[in-house]
Length: 186
Image (cartoon, rainbow, N blue to C red; front, side, top):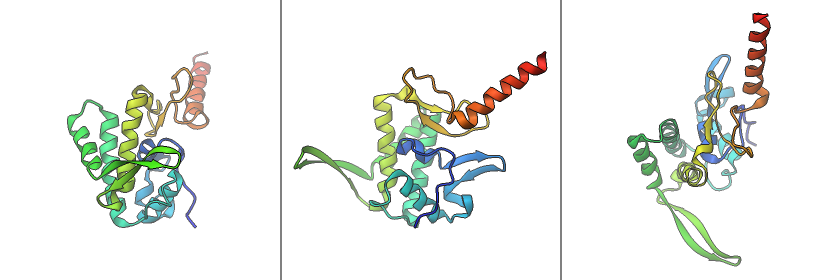
């Protein structure tokens, strides 16, 4: 049985969910793949694979983790600065390890991901998902507006004005801070 996911934000698209394996807490930065919540690195990977629905397709082992860390760094750089050519090359290098094979299924046309090495599967899946997000709504890939938060989210709000990773956490803190500032001025 896999341990509970300790991260404050889950359920984002795979690419952003991978970025959110690093987060800030009152005690400092935490990393799901570096011992957060008392998990080993590979146990953290197992938690992430389970959380993203990839557990049945890929194994939680050291080579998979190394490739996933490579993808996380590439995606972090690409999201931080979409104009960064070296970041784009890093994402492309991850994408070199897989491809989409068109298939014909009982339901009609389909596709299947293929990898030169299955340990690249989760990393490639996250990089491919980032391309899908860029293709559908690049302006909706956001970093939380809280200065102390490092989480990312895909803004699916109707008007596209979501600012916080979570209204219950960062949004609430910002509202409370503004309220406190207003009451101090009086």
